[in-house]
Length: 345
Image 1 (cartoon, rainbow, N blue to C red):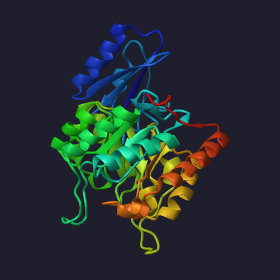
Image 2 (cartoon, one colour; image 1 turned 120 degrees about the horizontal axis):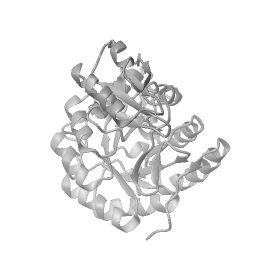
Image 3 (cartoon, rainbow, N blue to C red; image 1 turned 180 degrees about the horizontal axis):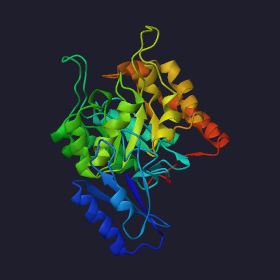
Image 4 (cartoon, rainbow, N blue to C red; image 1 turned 120 degrees about the vertical axis):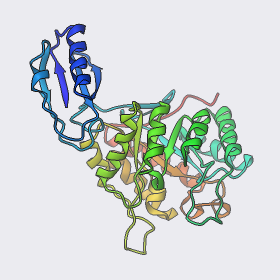
């Protein structure tokens, strides 16, 4: 439920509404706007009778939010939310930031080579897993804290923002110390304890769609983060499982405009995991920008044939550079721009 105040409503009027919402057993969330203040009612999973609140001084109208996801919905907030993870790296506006880098941090030389390559090609943020959830317990699991330190070193040398994954509550606190944005991977999209933790950390979060999750389930997972007070959430389409063996995943381009219609949160795309095959990454990256994606997440490795993980879907640096040139043209055609950083410090 949203309580829309008159433009002339006083601070006392707003406070009175907040007290009334608290008395009902819910949390009030005042949201000042350019013209008027709206007060959200947080904590309900059913329709609430707000007739007595509507009669309070200063109240213009009551809007009932019909979506099961409240704070994430367009009904709650009509305008787009922008999420800034570092200076010059903002998702949800006209700019389309590109995050690029290897699946995992493997060594100092590898991550620095990747960082300089993607920076030279035009990426504004570096991806790389220090903690890697893998299907097999015998696969490379990441370098842990040492990997986070190497990501920080890469940031210092290139100026790229850092996006990396947290797998559990303790890891989330550690990642928050090093990264500009905490990634929640597909396997953890419905790890509600972890979602609550990153919600409390007040750090930008990238939430990936689960491998078999519906769009509504993705948005409900985002609601967990917002319900803890953190609205700095970036959603990510990364493909869902399919019955067709010709493709690792089905890259759901439909999800981009669908989510953008339902939610005010920025929606980016990961064509690397979405296809799982190197020669399909660039076509799907181009298609995602054309479909209106608010950013891209692309795997790039200095030598994909020697990658510890996901080498088959990682672009070579020159392939990524060629793709970035194409993305500028596509973004321009739909009235947007691929984000760029200032000259290397």
